[in-house]
Amino acid sequence: MSTGAKVGIGCGSVFGAIIVLVIIGAVVGGNDAKPKASKPDKVASAPKQDQAKDDAKPAQEKPKTESKAAPKSQAQRFKDFINESGTSKQKAAAKHITSVQGADEKNGILDSAEIHTDYTGGLLGPNGGNGKLLATVFAEWQHSKNGLVTVYDEGGEILSNGNY
Image 1 (cartoon, rainbow, N blue to C red):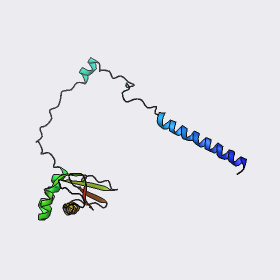
Image 2: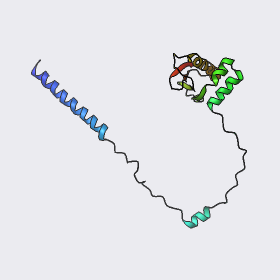
Image 3: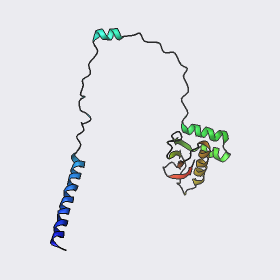
Image 4: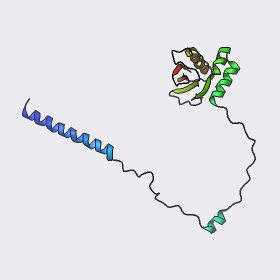
């Protein structure tokens, strides 16, 4: 290797090391943002008394509304669907549902829902078939072009999954 090539490689290595140090320095110490507990730029002031009196209006009485029942949870709506149109095996499996998440959230890219149960044993355990049963009936309840439902046991292990 010629002397010029050695000098070129050596200069390139030094230049590369400097670039790496600059990047590390920017990442570690380059935060000029204000701390979260900083004082606000403007101080709020109370309105003048005369102005407050002029602006005061009598409160309007709100019409009384009938108290509506709290909306049902996703899990309860899913259980209701199974109890209305499911088979006896599906109804038995529905008793083990503890929560359902993501059934109402659709983003058009990947719709993902979770069914949590009180089953044990995971994917290869004795309740894997019941997990698949719940995933199948979920696909009857919710429809999506790109949905994925995952059924979990009580320990958070996957029992089954399926498309919906």
